[in-house]
Length: 190
Length: 322
Image (cartoon, rainbow over all chains, first blue to last red; front, side, top):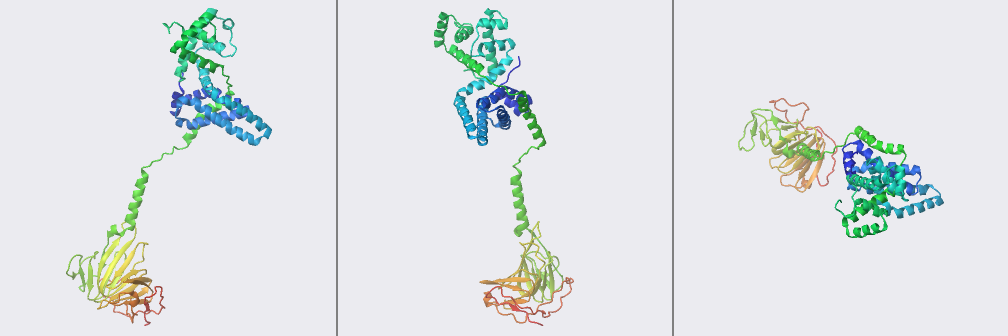
C-alpha cells in the first residue's frame, strides 16, 4: 500500500519543486473542485473554466495558504468565489429569464453549501483512501456505504463471492485500514 | 478495543442497524456511556456521509491540463530571471551620492590650490601666518600676501591672472578647488594699489571669484576688470569685459563692460559711490606675461560703451574715451 500524504506534506513538496506532489493534489481534489460548479447549475464548459481557474489560483497562492491542513476548505471557498464570479458574468450576457433561473439554482445551492462543505472535503480524501486500501476492501466498503440504499449482507456476499460470515470481520478490518489511511492523510477523526 | 465489551465490528453493525433487536439495544445503552464508542461512531458516520456524497469527476483531459500547470509555471519561472531585491545598495548609494556632492560642490572640503608669481626682486611675499615680507621664491599658497614695487603678474591654478601695478598689495585669502569637479573658490583681499583681474571662465555654477577691498566686495560675473584701492582706502572698479557685482555696506551694484564705480573710503553705501573720473586701466593682453618681465606702463582703456543701470542707487560710470 502506497503511503498517502497529508495536504500539508504535499504542499510543502510542491513548494520544494516536486511536480509529483502537485499531480497528487490535483488528483485528490479534482472531483471536489469540478462538482461544485456543476451543483451550482453551471454547465460543463463553465465548470471546466472554474476548475482551471481554481487550480491556477492554488498554484499561485500555495506559498501563502496559512493553514495547509485546511486546504479543502480553501479550495471550496475559492471555487465558490469563482462560481459566483462566473454566474455574475453569465447573468450580464444572458436574457433576464435565463439569468433568473440560474440565480435560483445558485441560491438553492448556496443554502446547502455550508452544510455539505465538510462532507465534500472528506469525500475527496475518502475517495483517495479507497484506492489505497486494496481492491477487496474498496469493493466491500463501496457496496456497504456508497449507496443510500444499503444492500443486505446476503446480496453483498453473493456479489463479492465471499462467505456471508466473513463480511462482518472483513468490513471491520477494512474500516481500520481506512481509518489509518485517512489519519495519515490528515483527516482528523471526529 | 480487545478488552472492550463491544467490539468495533459490533459497533459498526449497531450503526448500520444490522444487529438483532436485543443486541442493538444493549450496544446502544453501552455507547451512551462510552466516550471511545461515541468517538468511533462519529468517525464512522462521517466517513459514511462522505462516501455517500456524489462527486462528478472532471474529464481526464481537464485533470491532465491542471496537472500540467505546475510544469508550465516552472518553465515560465525558469525563463524569467528571479528578481532578487537587494536592499543594502540603497544606503550605500545614498551615502556615495552625498559624499560625491559634498566633495564636488563644497569648496570647504576642497583641496588648497596654488598660485604662481613672476618671481622678481620687486615682488615681496608674506607667507601665511608670518609678519615679515620676503622676496618671492616659490609658489603662492592660500593665505599668502603679495606686495610689489614694480608691476607683477600672479597666475592662479585655474589660469586666472592678477596684474599687480606698482605698489599694489593683495592677499590670497581663499584659493581652493573642489576635489572632483572643476569648481573653485577664490577670494583676493586687495589692501592697496591697482590690480587688473583677468578671471578664467567660470567652470561651474558654484565657482566664485571675489575681490575684497576695505570698502567693497567685488563678485566676478565676467572676465576682465580692475580694482584700485586708493591711499585713503577708497575703491575704484573698472570693468572691461563681462560684469562684476560690487557690494558695500547697505547695497550692491552690477557693473557691466565699460562701466566703473568708485566707492569712497568713508562712503559705505553704493548710492554714495562717486562717478569714477578717468580711470586708467592697464591693458590686459590675452597672452600670459613672461615671468620676470615687468608689465607695460598704464595706458587709458579705449572704451566708450553706454553704461547700464541695473541696480538702482548705484553710480555706474563709463570709462572715458581715450
